[in-house]
Length: 216
Image 1 (cartoon, rainbow, N blue to C red):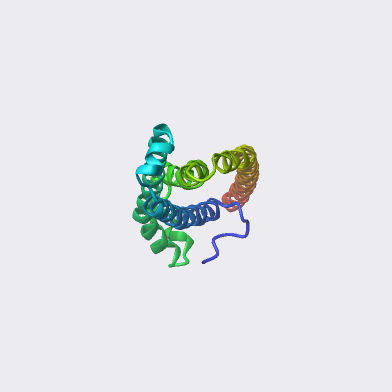
Image 2 (cartoon, rainbow, N blue to C red):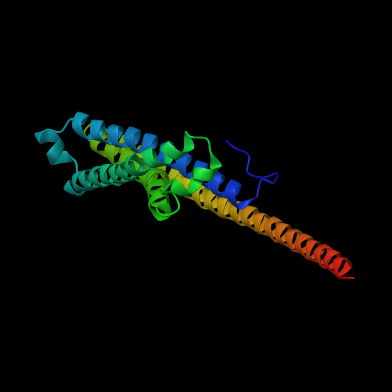
């Protein structure tokens, strides 16, 4: 990447880092969504359902399994579609390794789409996947042992709880970190502007002094 300035918080460097972050989010979202949606489809296809299963497993559980699987695949497909559409345009700019071309990337204009894909793939998609596991265990093991189905649900309850706590803590820490970095960048830019203003004032004084000397 071409060097734009000595500081790491110049406007061009900040835009370049934001571009790289958007690229990483889109890549992670694309890989995660493709993997988890594939697992969900395989689980729905491979689960063995027959007349005896239909008579034993509660119908509400079968409906929940169908709805959760469909919603899980739909959410990950949405994230995958957004990532697939935006990522090539971002990659085209990143592969040039020139910070002066950052403005040609659509990551700023499509910022909310990138965040939606990231949220669908990580937070909502993973939460639905955990719920899918609980429902799948119920549908799969209810014929053989109702206790096994309840055991799977009981084990997943604290896992989901810990997952939500980690997600909230992670996003809160991330927002705090972004605020601190942005505040630091603003302070550096203000200091740089003040220094440039002082240099301009000094330059004007020098020019005025030379002009007065020439008049005398």
